[in-house]
Image 1 (cartoon, rainbow, N blue to C red):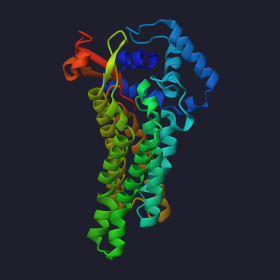
Image 2 (tube, rainbow, N blue to C red):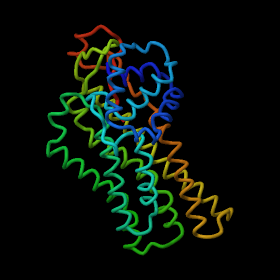
Image 3 (spheres, rainbow, N blue to C red):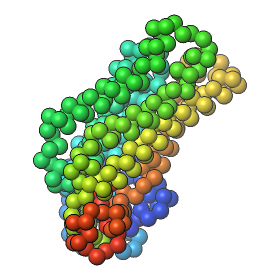
Image 4 (cartoon, rainbow, N blue to C red):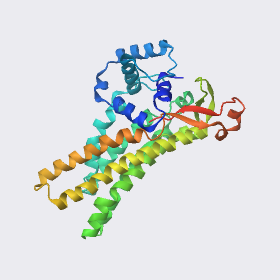
Length: 319
């Protein structure tokens, strides 16, 4: 079993454990580490022979695992491109979230959301389960076109309420409230989950590897792939749905209380609120489900049931 998955099996049993670990893994300073340093760290962890049966006490070992978790894909053992590493998600997605949530003009909203969904879909694809079989079809034209179609569709759905409002000159206060305040949160949540499902569809169509407690691969399961994609899609929906909902609610009370008296001050407060909510919700969403996923033996395909007697099997859920 890969050192990253061994780490999550030991250190990620509870939500609180996973939350604390993700707070450390999401440190942007980890992006400054060189590829040579990452390779040396991985070699050290792979040759250490540690079973991680107990929580890590050594600070040096902990830092080595954090660098590995933030930079290396556990299935392919390859270094993740800098822009798609977990510590880069917050710095890159924050300005995209802010511009996507402005909701001023339909055309601007469409293009800002197109870039937003393009990045989040790319992040989901790069950090998904990397089962060896997936390499055979991950770059096929069908997958590329499906991903681009999902991104374009999500951007169109995000801009559609504004198109209708402008098209039929619906300018009442109730319409403004619904279109600009209430709809963005559920639409962003649903479309974020939708793009994850589409770009990672090969995982439940072709299956992902499942392992026993010793890390031995016992088969490729479509049901495990379906579970991994569903959990990741749900976590992404919660992340962006909350990130668009909470700031809208908080800003409503800020405007009513007149804490910010000028448009510039109001914009500054809004940016601070969005940043705070996204920074808090990111480790929460990543901690909702175990990174080293667990699936019951009885829930797997018959051909896998015959190859092992263990009651629980493990897989990489992806991010």
